[in-house]
Image (spheres, rainbow, N blue to C red):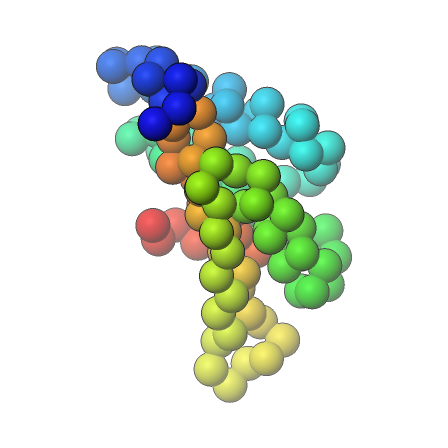
Length: 110
């Protein structure tokens, strides 16, 4: 556990704000515009790399780079059966102690 992980606020709204702040710092550090960021009530962060940021390969590279930059980052690529043009690349990690999913789709599954 990092020092940042120990600083997660106990109240849900404060934890959600803390997660959003951590995501903002992460994206600013990555210098990538156009990402969609959501934080749910349990302070779980989802970063979506939209179609406008490039072809599937370019977005997969971006997800991989962002997941690598996140603490404990790892990346998983899945291809929808019968549809090679529409695949999903998803990265998982932690930002300031909050779980983060970085994906090429609007997936909400954890």
